[in-house]
Amino acid sequence: MRLAIQGPNKPHAELAITLSNLGILYQAQGKLDKALEKHEMSLQMRMTIHGPNKPHVDISSSLKPLASVYESLGKLEKALEVYEQSLEVELALHGPDKPHPDIALLLDLLGFVYHANGQLDLALVKYEQSLEMELAIHGANKPHPNIALSLNNLGFLYQALGKLDDALEKFEQSLAMYRGVHGSDKPQSDVAVLLWNIGVVYHKQKNLDSASEFFEQSLEMRRTLHTGNPQHPDIMEVVSRLVDVYEEQGKHEEALALREQNIHRGKASDGGASNTASGK
Image (tube, helix red, strand yellow):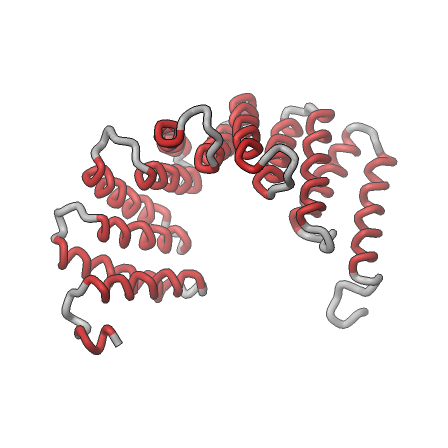
């Protein structure tokens, strides 16, 4: 309707919004080529409206989802280029020295893509800048999910760099932050993931007692979160790793018991039926 009213070649702010929304919808449906087309049209229209060299929030709003589509397509170099353009716009809008949530988010996104692209040193710079800005925005002593996420991302990066002690430190800080956000006794997927992450690092360090302790905590929480679905992938992931740890500890009976326990839970949840469609 807007296209018919305003014309396909006439730049208009509302039409640019519609194109952007269509891009987001197509991406959610996995239609990435169509998503790319709509986001590029939206960006071009907004650049025509506001000028290609004038920083404007609408231009940044088109650049970010466009970069996300490139990322989903596996075109990481192009995604980095567009994210950097968006960051440049945001810095021009808010100032290079003023902490702002949109800048912190873009720094984190850049860190993630640099990490995925194997550019770990650049990823580290962006993640550290993002964390520094999140701390400036929210305060160093106030639990906030954005700070917890930045710490978790840094933990993954340090793990990839082989700096396991640094990774452990960041994961533990992230866990403490998430518990501060959600409450220490309330099961949360974020907390369960951090317990898993810490267990993985301890396992890599051959600290089997600590690894089993954190895997057991993660397993207990994931079972609570996925009550009624004992074969959930998140549960099976921990069970598999915990069995490995028990075996490495020489706890063969515990490993066997965990396997059998999980099989029993699965049969109980489906009434003993086969998990195949044919029942064979």
